[in-house]
Length: 357
Image (tube, rainbow, N blue to C red; front, top):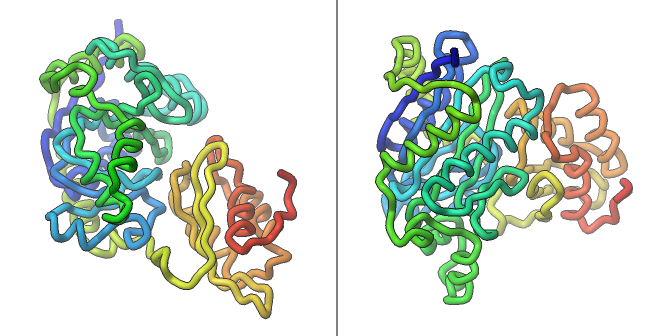
């Protein structure tokens, strides 16, 4: 007899409500209070930062304010995204042992493959694309990410039902001057929606149905609709009080890209990383470095701890400081090589790396 997991549909909500519910559900699952759960969710218009990102660096905050677009910070990593009712979110809150997989790379592949198989039930040839996307003929239709807390895992994805590309580009600090017809066409070539693929937006009930069927069959479980339990409601209220505050939204304060600092961005195997470096050239000392980008690191605060470890470090000790940090801290970087943090700092400073390529 298969296990029964909860099916939870929280409908259309604000970003603050959805993000605080992320935290409440994950904490409750980690505490053993709540069951394994598949959740569907939707957002009112919002710009969602990855946990490690700075709003000033990633978003056009003036545009967001003028357009009534809420700004929020996810509890998961990854890059900044624009979300509105034209996207459907799906999330799994599970015990890691219940998936029978040991590492995040294997978990990501398995769950993305199941989600893609569900999407194929809508008549589109969706396929998993490493490291965490789902595509149709090379065009992204769904992005995913995950986070671990104790023995509990939150793995989440989005599905593009319909999408306003121009609004997304404006939100993500792409200047009006760069919003040319060519730039718009290039952005549209990289993503695709169900509306474009099928000529219409399928009913939400149908989209949810195919995803539920795919996860049920692939995981060998049954899903039963249910609501929140009292422990989750209590945790949700407490989380909302923090998430709705400016202190959470601006938890990571990194200088805007136009500040007089050294900057570099590079895509490495395993993720995209940027570094902004405040450097004392006379003393050859790193006064402060800020990392951001789209990469997986757990625990979440490890990046901030690394930034603290590098503060006032001599340039010649850059690589050894990074290596010592990861040797003395339990950090999971998935496919991302920690030495890339040193490499991107060297790149920002225009210095030839001392580490092997």
